[in-house]
Structure formats: C-alpha cells, structure tokens
Length: 373
Image (tube, rainbow, N blue to C red):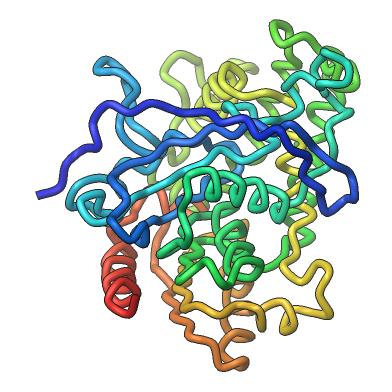
C-alpha cells in the first residue's frame, strides 16, 4: 500500500567555499536547498538522488503544511510503497544553483557588493550544478548513490553524475533527456529571452524583486510551456474551444488554449525569478555531454554503471532520436544500457503526466541494481 511522506521541510546548507565553474569563474559561498525522504540504512548505501527540471525545486514530495494545496512535484513517485519507496530508499532532492528556490542564484546577495548578483552572476553549465550537489553529498556523509534519476534538465544532471563521479554512482535513470541541446530548443529559448529583454521593466537585469518584468517573463514562460506540450495533448485538453467569456467575434476574445497560456504565465511570475529563468535557460542551451571531451564516445566511455533511458513518442522538445543517439553510442561502447520508447500523447511533460507508463521498468531496474549492490 503506497502512502505519503507526510509533512516535510526544505533544509538549506551554506558552503563557505568557492566552486570553480566550467567558465573558469568561481562562485562562493554556495547555499543549497534540499529535502530528504526516508532513512539511510546502516551501510549508507540506499541513497537515490532526484534531479529536477528547468524551473523545479527541492520540494519533490510531501507537503510543507497540512493545508498546502499541492504536494511536491513528484509526489506520485516518492513515498512508502511508491516507485522510489521510502521504506527502502533514502531519497534526496536538491535545488540547483542558478535557481531562486533556496539555492544560490542571480537573485542572491553577492558577498563582494552586498547587493543581488543580477547579471554579475556567472554563467553556469549543468556540470556546475552537479559539482555543487556533490558538496551536499559530502556534507551528508553519503559515500555513494544507488541511483540518480531525473527528467528533462534532471536527465542531463543524471548523465553528468554518472560520467563525472563513476566511483560514486551505481546507476542512472535519465528520462526525456538529450545528450546535447538541439538548434530548435536553443531557438525557442532565444525567443523567450527576447520576450524578457523587450520588457522595459527588465532594466538589463537590474529590476527590483517587487517590480519584475512580469509581462516579458509570462510570455517567455508561455513559449517554453508550448514546447512541453504536444499537438495531441492540446487537442485533447483544449481543442478549438472558445472561451465562454468572450463573443466569437470579439477581437480580443480568446481560445481556451490562449487563456490557459496566459494563466500559466501569470502564475509563474509569482513564484520564479526572471534572471534565474534566463540563467537556467542558458545552461540548457550550453548543454553538451561531450563538452571538454574529445567527442560523444569519449565522454560516454567514462560511464561505468548501468543506465535506464526513457523517451516519449510525442516529445518534440527532446525527441526520441536525441535520446537514441546517446543510447546507441553507449551500446556500441558495450555499456549496460536499457532503453524504452514510451507511447504517450502528452509531449515532453509525459514523464510528469503519465508516470505509470514507465515506472514498472524503474522499479524492476532499481531492484536489480540494489540486488547487485
């Protein structure tokens, strides 16, 4: 019988150190927000790292209070008797650096000036996020990870963990990910950036927190959100329905899909920082697992653990062929790799909307990895 992890608390740890980034710049001190669920076993060998997507946070499961309306973003997956069974596993989720949900990002105070970093914050890569997470692992005295799992940007983090810490990671589960960001994905982010840059309230990143470039960020979010959906999912959810509020020939009348994107964008502005959105989008654009290696095969040759991969048929942000490029390279290298193409109409968001379609494979895979350990 599956259940909830109950009431949880987001913790924060501050590392009084400087992390050298891929750009050559240094960042420090570093704050990381995180949550944990379940207990470490006596050998401290049952830890699973959950990595969140672009605008996610450390609150992956449970509720912060009894009256919190929604649970953590992956609550369906984490808890007693669930896929990531907290009766068996110690599950850890950390907010990435560059974000605005408790970890150091552009809205944080720059210790050298006492003011928010804004655009003085260094450009990050996904690899830098993982190096910061390694600080947290050391802080918690966790010597190894049974697995690292995540979707979208979380899949990129999982792959980076496996490649750069092969002695620590015993398996990875990248979901709806890619080994390198495509020109189309970069183009979508470029348009989203321009929406923010063209908002006069952005002020080249020097806006006040209480007066963000709300219109630009809401539009940027809408652009991104379209890429998370699919033609089929929009047909199912919205069709060509016109809003009941508007007359059919009202010039400013909206279809339901338009109204949904407007609502989604407006609510996003209330919970996320604009500069963090931009920095994380840049990290996504820059992502290439082969960065600083001689090529894709050289990078993937570092992976020593089994990996379980998922792609979704209607995902056009990171379409299946991109996952398959990495999977095929791993296969040719003789690595332990398993791949499943999941039939779903929900686009890139399939891993959040229809987890039941792929989770049986995850349970079986984790059982094998745990038994092998």
